[in-house]
Each structure stands twice: as structure tokens, then as C-alpha cells.
Amino acid sequence: MAIIIFSYEKKINMPDYIIKGGDKYKIITDHLGSIRYVVRISDGAVVEEIEYDSFGNVLYDLNPGFVPFAFAGGLYDEDTGLVRFGLRDYDPEVGRWTSKDPILFFSLGSNLYNYIFDDPINSIDPDGQIAWVAVGAVIAIVGVVSLIVSEVYKDFTNKSRVKPACSGGNCHVGPPLPQPDDYYYKAHCPPPHPYTEESPYYNPLLEKRERENPHLEIERFEVPPPPIRYQQEWERIRR
Image (cartoon, rainbow, N blue to C red):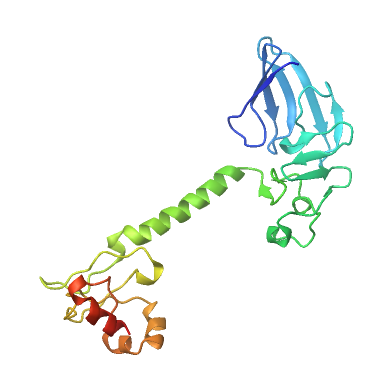
């Protein structure tokens, strides 16, 4: 049995190169990851060419079975005409999945058999669960996640986002705590608390806390935990 090596570099749903029978081949795809050509690197010969309609039906196949991939990077079954994407099989003849979406309506669609909201030209679903915009999909997803993580980290660590309660030797801003309810964007300037020796902070979230803790309406006071010697008094104040 011949061993075929697949080399992935740019796409998660389609290899860029394959090594088969001692020869190395370059796979050329479109924006969806559908194989268009397979070129032997040693002499530039086109050994495979595939054409599809908009929903992925194979219209022309120069060398059937040369590679197992086809439309949108799925695994193509020549006998059934189905294309496997992760958890489900897609039937390009009807433009639908053969089974329900495993994540049900969390995919944001009302039809559990619908294939990428009937937009096969611009979208892909490599794992059979949720559609991605094909152009720059991976970059977009990674970029958004990175931005969210970056902003959350910056919110909890960047002291420039916290304004000092007042200026002076006995008034300062303590380090923000890594919980949303204990991070403060603004501050005002009452004197330091007698037990914690910290300046009060003010945050829009305190509006909710003041309704639940009437003493905050007067003191507008919320700071990181105090030194242990003031812990009992601190708990009394918080209650």
C-alpha cells in the first residue's frame, strides 16, 4: 500500500502539498479550499483538475481518486457523491446536509439541514457545525479572539485606565483586582478609609452595589481586601 503524506501550511481544511509515489505535488485551491489543480513539482505537469458548480457538484474530474479532497476541502466519496466535513456529510446534489446540525440551533440557523445559509460561494463549514466566511476566516476568528483577550487583559492590568482618587501623600490607588466587579474606571476624592488606609474608588458598577448595600450610598467605598489586621472591621463594613 502506497503511503501518501499531506502537508498543511495555509489552510486548515486542505493540504498545500502531497507526497505520493516519491513525487511531490502542489495543490492549488480556490478561496473555499476546493481543489482546482494538482501540479507535479518536478515537471509542472497538471495531474488533476476539478470543476464544480456553485454548490459543489463535480462537473469535471481529470483524474478521479488521485486525491481524497474536493469541494471546500471536504473528503469526497466518489460512490455516493457525498462530501464529508467533520461531523456531517454534505450532499451537493440537493445542497443540504444529510443529518441535523449536532449543535442544533446554536448555529444560529432555523433549518438544521441547511448548508451554510445557502451561500456556498462565500462560506465554508469545515467541521459540520457552523459556517465561516471563507475569505480570511481563520485570520478573522483569531484576530477577534486575540482582540477580546487583549482588551480584557488590558482592562485588568493597565493602571492608566484607573484615575487616582486624589493627589497627596496619603491618598493612592491600589492595584485593580482581576474581577469585573472590582475594576474601576473612575475615582473621586474622599479621604482614605480609616481601616483599609486605601482611597475610595468609584465605578458605574457601584450603582448596583449601592442598591444592594446602602452603606455604599454614603461612603461610595469599594477597595481591594484590607490587611489582615483590619479584616474583621472590613467584613463588618461590607455587611
